[in-house]
Every structure is written in C-alpha cells, then in structure tokens.
Length: 344
Image (tube, rainbow, N blue to C red):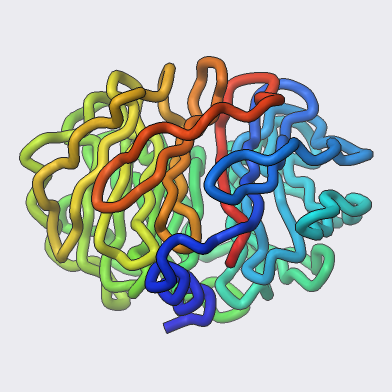
C-alpha cells in the first residue's frame, strides 16, 4: 500500500481528525479558490499573484501537499504553485517547456509525487512531466494514443499504471503501464463504457477501476483491475440520475460516489467488489450539475463541485450523507469544476 493511502486509512481510523485545505477550480477569475478546512470552511486564502489564464477545469495537490496544480482552458493550459497550508500560494512555477496542446481537463500527480500528468483536448491528448518543484522535460508520447479528447487521468495507487478517460470513440478508456514513461497499452475491456468517458478512478487498494461516462445509462462501469481489465461488475440496481461526470472511492475503499447532470446530482454506494444499495440522497442537495467529487483524506467529509451558486457543497460522511456544512463566507466566483482536499 502506498504511503498516502496508508495515511488516509489511519486518518479514517482516527475518527475524522483531518484539518487541511480544500481547493475548488472554477470558470471565472481567479479560477482557483482555496480554503482552510476543519469540519467546515475557514477564511479563503488570498488569490495567487499570477492566476491561471482561463477556466479552471481540475485541481490537484501533490502527495506531500507542497504543490498545487490547476488544469485550465487557455495556454499554457497547466499552472502549478508551491503550496503551504496556513500561508497559501507561493510564486507560480515556470511553465513546462512543452505545454499541453490545448484545453486541459484533468491533472494528477503520481503517488510518489515524481510525475505530473495532464489530460487535454488535442493530440497527443495526454502529457506527462517529471515533477520536482517544477516541470521537467515532457515524457515521450505513448505509442498508442487515446483516440480523442482526454477528459481525465489517474495513476494507480502503486504508481505502476496510468489510466485516461476520453470521449468520442470507443472504448472511451485507455490504460498503460507506467515507469517513468508509458509502456504498451493494456488490452481494452471486453465490455467498454457505452459513451464518452468523463472520469476514471482507481480504488485505494488498486484492485478496481471505475470509469464514469455520459449520455447513456448506467453512467458508470467498474472493473476488477490487475495489470489489465477484468470482467465488468454488475451495474448498480439504482443508477446515477444522469450523465456521469466524476467518481471517487472513499479512502478505505468501502464507498463509491458519483456526481452527475441531474438531481440529486450526487449518488453514493457501498462498495465491496461490487455495488451495494444506494445510500439515501443528502437532505440538502447540491444546487446544480455535479462536476467533481472528493473525499477528505480521513473519509469523514465529501465535497461536490457544481455549476450553480454556492458552487461547492460539502457534507459529513459516515456510511451516508450528514447535514451539509455551511457555505464558505466567500464562495468561488463561478461554476465549480474541480475539487480536492490537501493530503493529511
């Protein structure tokens, strides 16, 4: 088990003691808003002195919490900063010498923090860089590229694989071995997602891989994963209410949450090598389309970024949704598109 996952599980055992930060990327300037978090929002940190240049699409903290990266819609398409909890943004890192080729939708650090991956709109659709307090020289492209717009990217918990969700052509998901560069693409799943891939997530133990997709029910497929796709798990008996946008496993792997286009905008299930009976919807729903979902490192809270004010909704989590936390005093300025908690 990788150290970050282990820390998350230890936090869960500790009963919700997490205090850290929560970041929301959004579609209007300053494109990124970050708040202290301790069972509720603290006062928003000051904006970075150099903001991202366009719509914030997704945000990620490095595994050690020392950096924060934002994927966005305008060149250079990826912006990264040093991050210090309690202080906030440092001076923006230099742009990569070879930037992504167009709008970046997804961003992920490898579990050891040594690499940074960006999913983007035009070929090669996926760009990965060595990371050490700044961008290194982009790795060579994979020999088999994703077939179209890449919308999300995720590393497996052991860092040995990298998965990309993409749209417009089957199989809508592609996975490669990863070892400081791309290996030969794994075989496609025997039952691929039905339409445009929107997000991809590994379970904390790396034994399962979830792919969220749009347009056609059931909007989420999950596969056993062991250096390749196993036979798809049965669909949930109660599917998400609309086009899937994002999914996340809880840190202990016992739950799986999906955000989607139509009410209730977030749907969660127990998970144990298959879907359990859907949890009850939160009593206060997100106010619009769910774009991104994240659990806190201790698994005690769940956050949903969405497209209508207040743009971010967070709930206590204990095998189900608790009463929604109060909105932040200073809300994000627009459509919430990404959300991430800093590591424990």
